[in-house]
Image: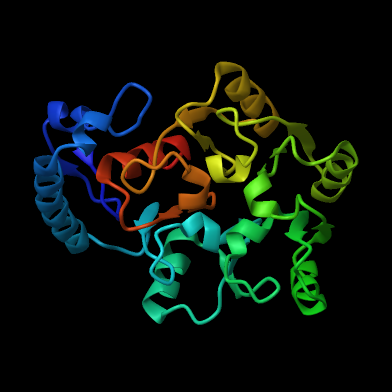
Length: 280
């Protein structure tokens, strides 16, 4: 089998090693996380794999890793919406280059109400955008250039944390009232369903989707996964990010061309992300 780190270059490793990191649900085995020797061993291996991957870096990479302002929570800081990536201003040029090369989207720097947590506050598709009510008039004007905009108000305003959207459908948190779902369906021009993921309301933090697949929290129930598959029109898979975190929506930003995750994400996790989002 293979391990992929940051580029499409494949590094062959024994099958028992590759599969030994993960349980049947795609999570890093919890017993390994309690073993100091595992951290040391994996750190050495990852260093060598990254060196090999860097040698093969080219202009087309389906997945890459980068930290945003020191945080490995790429999904909280970045919002992939249709053909544009909204991101915080003042990112270092090497980071911008990685985002452009990997995601193949138009990049638009923006803050929402002065916050750099763009991915937590914005969500949408090529037809419409939902944004938190902390957005000011300038923010909304910028977003309107890319589609119709709905401002989410009150206690359910963190659009990126409460929605999972692609071009076929949308998954909404049960905390969003029925009238809000109707408005979202009109603005996004897709069917919207209300459901939890793994029994939790913050669905946008627990799932990441594009038009090819959706990656879900490992504890998603069969009924939840079936409903999500039906509305988004893509096959679901489960996995983790950032060395075992189940909050895949907070940790990953994806387009139809590629995905960005934090630098703590392991090789097996990157491989699962690629598979789930249709890049393999």
